[in-house]
Image (cartoon, rainbow, N blue to C red; front, side, top):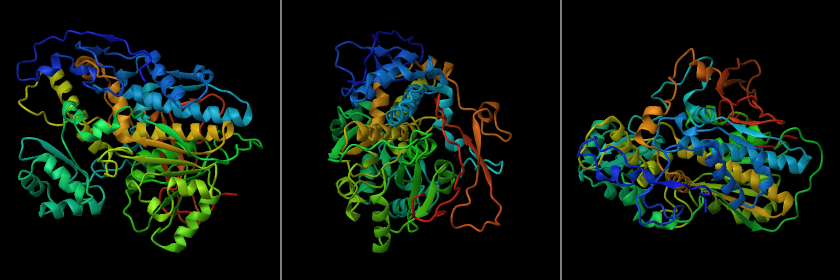
Amino acid sequence: MYLLSAELVVHSWPVAFGRSIPKSLFSGHWSTPRSPAFIRPTNRSIRRRSTMTATDSQDRARALWLENGLPPEMLSHLNLSKNPNSAIDSSFKIASAAQTSIGLSGLAAAYFHSLRTGVTQDVTVDARHAILDISSEFWYTVDGELPKPDSIWDPLAGIYKTKDDSYVRLHTNFPHHRDGLLKILRCDATREAVQKELLKWNAEEFETQAALARMCASAFRSFEEWDKHPQAIALLNTPPVSLVKIGDAPRRVVAGEVNSPLENIRVLDLCRVLSGPICGRTLAAHGADVLLVTSPQLPALPLLDVDTSRGKRTTQLDLTLSSDRDTLATLVKDADVFLQAYRPGGLREKGFGPQDLAKVRPGIVCANLTAYGWEGPWKDRRGFDSLVQTATGFNWAEAEAHAAFSGKLFEGRPVPRPFPLQALDHVGGYLLAFGINAALAKTITEGGSWEVRVSLAAVGQWLRSMGQLSPQAAFGDGKPLPPRTIPQHPEVAALVVTSREALGDKRDASEALRAMTGISQSAILSKTPVREVDAPMGLDRNDPVWLQ
């Protein structure tokens, strides 16, 4: 499957942490317990090595590249950092996942460019740059100011204790999600009131009730508990990114000169929050005309949109109106890529499912992102990075690892410990971009219409398959994120680029335009550097038309 160089070794951890720390910490816990989708069963307690070299990362990149039917000779052009996992303080190999996914995205763009022009080039990714890249929303400034640290998350979002001595995580960043959860709890909109009511619920009971109401909450689970769940079983053997041919079409005709890999490629981006928008931002950086389409009837997250919309144009359509559906259908006829991350089936109900799009525009690439995949009882469930982390065992395993490092004792279930950044969202976004670029290449080599599938849960399964670092390697040797300061920390300042606010089609030319800085793309292409261009810095700045 995906571990071409899965070298397994047995470690013996010291046992000086105290008897209150679970015994699993000393019996193979750091090895990704029971992850059968990627690790063959064994009757020994085994652990993966606590470091990962560039060779290991490139083996993982090679596996995903070949799994998706791409030419092996391109892999010699991919250069990744050595010993990447000291680049962040987590027990999971987030830096390896980051540089691998970013490198694959860049390499697939370079491959598509080589098919169009005959020009080959190298792709290089530095692991620490990749870590700042996959936390980009932390670092951007507008007119020299950082967004307030507590402004990205709603005050009610986060972890709460439950009656069964467990926890649930609530996601309340959208007002209708917050209001829906408060309606279930029948309480005031304060953390104290929410906590009081949740102490009357068992964790999984509340998770189920929230899902029935189409709200967003996750019960806190260990890996062992998640592995028994029907959704985990449904995800077995699911890769983090897959390409599916969904229709016949002639091979794409290669004509004309292009200076960027995705120049003249038209992308409809119907995504919100992080993973999908990050994918669209990446495609724009490689030269695509990315038109971000949002709804005036749905809430926005402007503090995230500012960063993730860099390089795009933005417009709004209300797909409950037939006239706006007609406008989107017209745009589809000339689109190369249709990227969406709405709830499963939401756009299909309006006539914009993958099969519908392939009929209207043969040769299109349809890219779809979900929380929990396309099979199983949770396939239609709403979800976000933080919820998937909590539901599938990562917050538990990270908490145990940190307890082992710090020597802090706990009884029963640990307090959930999230990743230091939204790793599943960002890595998933880059894997989605990789899949799109790979599918575009297939439209040249094979023809056809293609669907690209990525789910946050499958991305998490892939990350988990890499194993865990030792507690000392994770939290002793791992480098924390730099502080968010103005002036910016030198490490951040060295990697930011400046973008001017785009005038767009709907602004008064006399209005003062702002400037923003943001972390630069960490995939460095040797012959076609990414484009760092204007930023819309707002929704609905453009007419719903393609550039000529």
